[in-house]
Image (cartoon, rainbow, N blue to C red; front, side, top):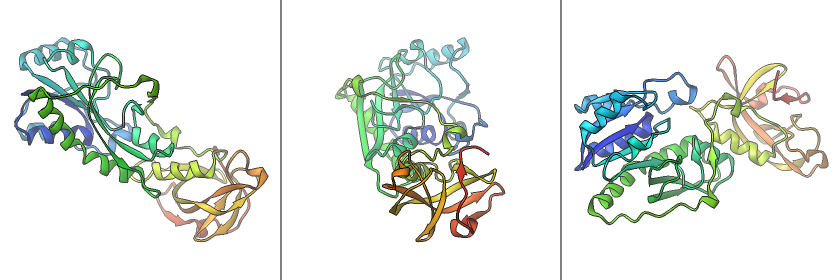
Length: 315
């Protein structure tokens, strides 16, 4: 089949590589220009460079809303469009243009976690599995009929970085298997159960700010979800911002006021957490390693030399 690819960052790069390695003919690639957005500088393998290396025409667009792009798409005469990590809505005159429409590849188990940063949100929320879905694009974002879906388990110590590597490896097989089914006419399109749908916004630095009224279990997952190279979860100590690089759930229960720097436990320092911490039946967050604004990483037991005082959401 003749394929046009819309995509960006490593997700788009993996998709394009799978197409280039297949029997299909990639006739045009559309990708975004480089971005200064903190999350878009992570996993930023260049789709444009890969396409140019293989002699595939490339168009750079922030949004697909100009006549020149539509003309180029019509002239390319694709049998199908494949999209992965295209950051804006595609209009129907594009996604319905080819005979087989547009296959969108999304890194969640749709209908859950449509939208942005699904792996991070899923890890924060304690999901037991994550995955990748290939579905036919329609007018509602990430809501079209599903043709292929694969999952991987989430382990008790997995970080968002671990889950990224595990799910990005699913892209190639899913793209190839989906296109094989579509080309052969054996694809079975399954409507999504919209009663189970959830939709999440892009993450920003504000979403990494620690709220010590969250239960410690949730905060421990937040720290893992904001693992390097993502912007780490952060808090303030004596007016200075510190990033929590490593943390665990406490063994004992602790009582008091959320954010209190309480006591050493094991190789870390317990911070009181949770709205019901005053009852003394809640776990604390054992902070193990922190990073200061100068980029230096410290063991929490070295950084917090005396107990007492508070970690706060703002200076």
